[in-house]
Length: 259
Length: 164
Image 1 (cartoon, each protein chain N blue to C red):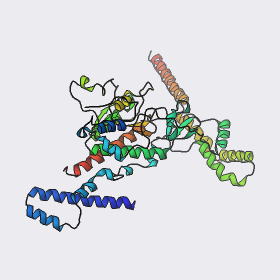
Image 2: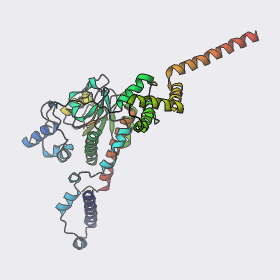
Image 3: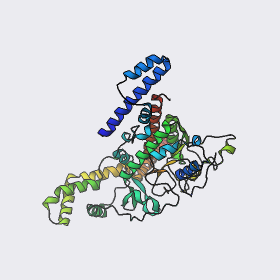
Image 4: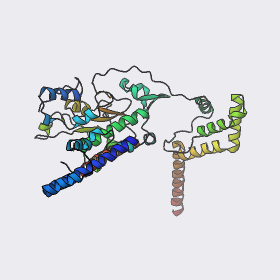
């Protein structure tokens, strides 16, 4: 805890320095600028400053770990899986056990993985990447689309057309920029088969974050988050969290002047 | 831009890394996520043919499940239980009372009967059970609606006859 606070402090200090530097360079009075630089109370060089302002050096630069607690996941019914007959063997490491024939997720593991996924999302948003929310459940369409709208990003919560990613230039009739991150609120389509976007994103080298229920395959998902993907409360929680992570990343981006 | 569409070979990271190393993909074409992925790699690499870990799924059981089973065997379930309902179920009420009285009795069956007696005197369990069934059960809702309809239709017929 103390370590993160000191990190934060040094980062903020570094940011102040970069701002003063940019101001002095704008005024173009070389003599004054050098005088100011001499007066600065630190011996940091420019390369060191860049290192300090690099968000990738911090374990939790955007503070996404404070967005939720394990109790929130429990209250949103994230721990409920499907019946144990439908369990996908690759989901076994994320499972706490089976309660009278129903799979229960290990929320400690879910918390860790969800935090990693949120951190990744915030970094992509900070770098100006395009983020696409994907879902194929009609009952979650409004939730997902609203979350994307509030975050200022994109959503595809309707029936997935084949070749949307793999043959985009033909479909959109021009050079297309594909999303830099796909967030899948559920990785299955209503026919209980793997969503086409999972495979296509892997083909096009787009990282995916996916909520994987006990009957989905987590193998191709870059950042799988084991949890309930059917309950409206759980979907609402995921959407809110990813929206907040994106907004955190974007707000940090607007704070720092690009140099 | 060069790319590899073989999603079953390696992960997205290893494929892009190979292209960058060989020079097929230029450094300026490097995807945005590449550096982030390097800094925060996922806990398990997303390979298509990842081996299945052989872990047995354990059953989640509690010692008080025996009491629960006994309770449900005798009184049955009160129907559907809403997960949003914050009040304890009749079974949970029973369990709480059971735990309270556990110290005073040595024999399990005696204890069970004693708890039943106490709760019957309090009538909390059974009245709440009845109330819940009145409030929530589908069958009772249908019967009440049916009654209302039949009453209305009777009144209507009577009115019509009197007017004639």
